[in-house]
Length: 392
Image 1 (cartoon, helix red, strand yellow):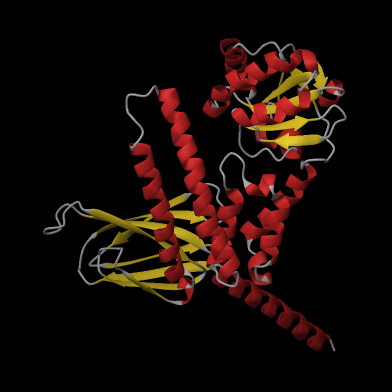
Image 2 (image 1 turned 90 degrees about the vertical axis):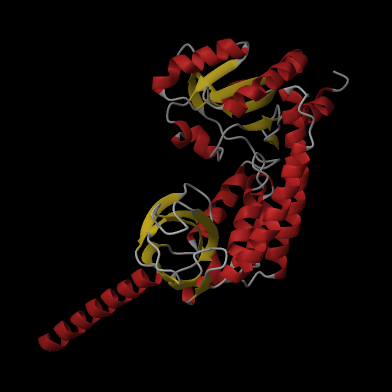
């Protein structure tokens, strides 16, 4: 009887370890390659996760045309691979070329030309790569259009005017790209592995007003069209969580109260401003886009401050940057409204509650404490405020 119990327990342990080992193997991208030419050099590797975040860098040595490397990943990723040949290579010394590949856990075999645009890629870890090459080419068409549009802007214009035109060009061209490349891929090929990347990219654009924050319900509907096995990927699990948080700060939802200290060390709560329209602005002294937006926020404050409108700025500056924070307030001439600081930065209660993952991020809150707008910049802030105070 005891032997039976022991044998059963050993079997369970073995099965558990075997399952763990299989899972570990299943989460590894293994790349082996051999070029036609017996060259020596290095491969510079940049790994981009489909859900964004920090890029990861690595390298692999090429010896007599052969190379190999591996990467742990529970889902697809984009690998940008650059081949740098040694200077003493006959006729090719010091040259470099690159290409991007869409890889997923499994085996990847690379062969053929040292021109990476022509390298043959096969194996179980290359599902979706052929589609990715067309997808990437389609994106590059829009990048070329944007580049041409920006080059057409007269060099004689003041920098401020040129920046406005460049932004307008980017907004209009990227919007078409989002629809014709990202959204088209999701809608037409939701079963394809490339849809995981396309959904993450569509949800994260436009940069300052991403759809996952501004239109969480839309992204939820698109996410639901993808197979369940894809929805279990880390990036899409994370996206689901972001959508839930975004819905808590959507238009019509009640504000989330918090208390922080002002420039004098006095505790101030968001709820102290009930009865007014509050422009809640998350920023920092080191944030260049935030600082560029300050003159516009100041203009709107001066225009409507006597009509029931105020600004509440929350800085992400750390304790060590207190002087820089106070100097920025003075230099930008924005000390006429309340300034708070959360030294915990993006990990603080306020930032987490309001899903602040980058700055500038802002919210417009009604007198009764409900969200009426989010990420309102430049002329869009004026457009949002004007109807609220018309006739007052």
